[in-house]
Every structure is written in structure tokens, then in C-alpha cells.
Length: 188
Image (cartoon, rainbow, N blue to C red):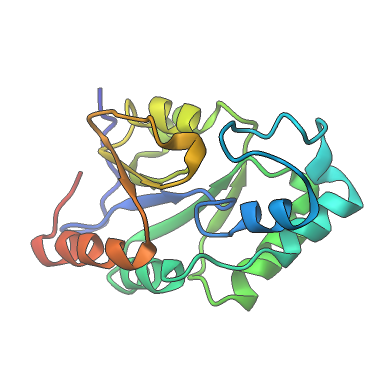
């Protein structure tokens, strides 16, 4: 079930991090401008390709980071873990995404753009050991490929109950988990 994990040294791992609604509060920007429900994901009210439009790209750029996400990911990176941002954003958002991560102080890392449904394949072949993901469909697939999936709590993923998926309400809560991984040199 689990792919062999990349390790450069004791306890080092590759960590996959989704961007939209995992570290960037895109939901708040959508709710500010559109009448949508957070009960269904992706939002059926938004037209296909919305995030490739000037309006959609502006919305991505305006999103604020979720509190505590920068600190948790910096802690992992500080201890030698490789952070890889794996997103379903359109490739046209590459510069906006790169700039957004830098402006908000996220640790450096590769940025991979994949269509929805392909994160599991990437994680399997690239040896991702831990993944942060809000999308319930992606998370369900990822749990088969990585040791653990941490899922920020949103209404659309409240019913997810899987063995290797753990929901969290705040990135500040995740600080204890990152400290545990670092202290115990835990490899998932």
C-alpha cells in the first residue's frame, strides 16, 4: 500500500502540500465575491476553468494564508524535510503561485501543477511520506500512497473518515504533530 519513502538521512521525508484551502484561504475570497456553499467541493456554482480567468487568478493572488501554516512548514523544512507544493491550480497560475508563496514567507520548494485526481500517482512515484490536502477525493486516493494525510477541516470534507486521514481545525494544532515527527525522527 505505501510507496517507499524518500530519505536523505534519518527521519527525512518528502512532504506534499496542497495550496488552495490547505495553506491559502481561497474559500474566504470565493465567499466574499460569490454566493456558493462550502458543502460541496469543487464548487458547482463556479464555471469550469474559472481559475484560469483574470478574475479567478486575481482571487488566487488575494487569498490570505491560513494561520500557522507558514510556521509548521518552516519547521519541517528547517529539519531537512523536502516541501513539495502539489496543486490542481491551472499552470497559468504558476507565477502568481510562486510569488504568493514567497511573499507570505513559505519555505522554498518545488511547485507541481497536476489535474485533479493525479496527486496519488505523483505521490506514489515520487515517494511522498506525508501530505496536507483539503479535497476529500484527493485525500482518499492519497491515503493509499502516503503514510499519513492531514486534512484542514472544511464543511465539504466533514464526513471523511479514513484510517490514514486526520482532520485538523487549525495549523497551530499541527505544530504538535510536526514536533512529534521531528523529535521521534518518525518516517511514515
